Image (tube, rainbow, N blue to C red):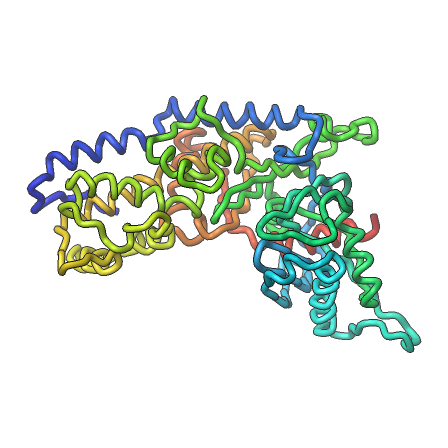
Length: 476
């Protein structure tokens, strides 16, 4: 965005000085950036050396030790269950990194969230059967069928805490997100629920893999680019995955592995990294955290993910408005209520690229909506634009700090590309976000190494990635 011109503002010197003070708190200096990187690396090592992967754990083993080559073909299924939506996909691998996806999507009702396990998983099985019937040369088995239909492998992306003990084995820790299944689901094996439901419905599908969406994103991107070494989710939330040597993952029974140099994909759960010893929390970060339903939880994510950036901008702007330094004390409708200003609004505002400054001012004024026919000055709008840029630029730096830590957990040859598959709306849709992240990486690594770092959009891990892992482990 062009340099700000604070004209026509009676309080311009005061607000420039005030905003500069705030900007200092949001600036990631080289020393602060280094502290964050070192803090993340320490948390990676601590997570790797923790004996348990249950509860709110980090550095969780995925049991995925293979990556696709991009040449695989065939049809494989994926099931992606989130808090509000069930997606069941048939992924046709075409080779050369190409895929076709057929999808059935269903909303999860409150009635299903509070049903029995049989009702809930039978509903899932019915959705799988609906998808299966759409596939060419497939049919669901009936009692009088002479020849059973071919069995398909399925990968499950389960968006709830799971104590995973194998590629297709995992104990459900808790559901949350409004799920209160009446006959008890906690502590039960997830794959068994699917197996029994598919048997009740005579559906020829077997779950061969359970994956986290971050693992799925890395595997999905490896199908189109086999050099991928980092999977990064940067949307409403944030997470990351990368391959780690089995010998370093203490959670595993290393004695069971013949080759401890084998690499296994690790789900870092980097969203729960971070503490006050190295995160530069501002008073606005603390205010956001205090107003959140889970104060003290996920401090890093609250500073930089798509769920929170809009509220941070709102808190800064309202602070200036309350002191009558912005909008002459008038609070626009879009900033009046907590969590009313969204990251999507920031993205829209920063996306205005018109050379006509008056047009940009008009658009932002219309978006914010002021009462009593109040019209903000151009200087006011410029200040608000600066607040958006300030918050989003820090977010990019925080994302880069996580990537630095994960890249430095690995070893790369001097001429090897460092390929990062990134999935998520904050990365993909926010104007200039990839460039800002890469700029921060270049400031850390230097130009020669930064040229080798490729931030590439990864395809959906919940469908393509889960299906690919199902394919990789269909025989064991």
